[in-house]
Structure formats: structure tokens, C-alpha cells
Amino acid sequence: MIRVVYRWRVAEENFEEFKALWRATTNDIHESVEGALGSFMLRSFDDKTAVTTIAKWDSYASWQAFWGNQDPEQMQAMRALGERISAEAFEEIEDHTR
Image (cartoon, rainbow, N blue to C red; front, top):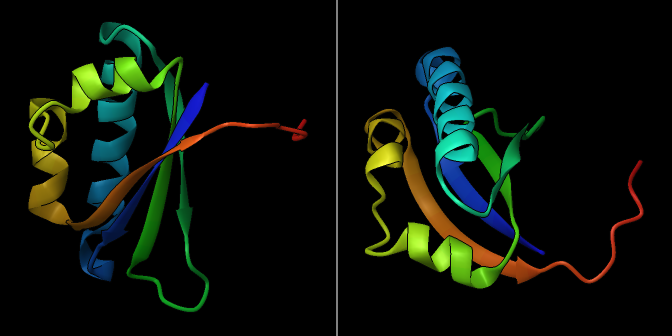
């Protein structure tokens, strides 16, 4: 299991549209891309333009197959509303959330 952390800069006036688009994109990827297990979104209290999305994948290989050229078609509309600062994959070692 891996988690991929995407950091975004989203103008406050674009946030609601970005959030709706992210939700639809996440659901589409989860339903149509092998190995995709969903995602969640976080927004900073201190800087409302700082948004983090964290996706769960069954393996690094599955994410790499999706990620390809680092500009997946499914995520292009999101990039029109927000600047993707980074994307980094992490191996999930333990998860004690409920």
C-alpha cells in the first residue's frame, strides 16, 4: 500500500470549484484506474490557498502506471484551477487510524 501526497496552491476564489472537480476526478480515477483506492483532501487553517490531497494506491507500480508523464489526463482540469506544487509517493508502513 502507498500514499501519494499532492500539494496544491489554489486561490480562495477557485477553491469551491476545485473541490468539486477534485471530488469528481477522484471518484472517476477510483472507479476506472486499476489500483486506485481513493483520496482525501486537507486545507490549511493558516493559509487557505494551501491544499493537500492524499491518494491511496495498492502499489507503487499501479500509481506509476497512472502517473506516467506526470500529467494524467484526468487531473488536467484540476491544474487549470490550482497549481500543483509537488507529488510524492510514500510507502505506507503502518496505519492506526480508525
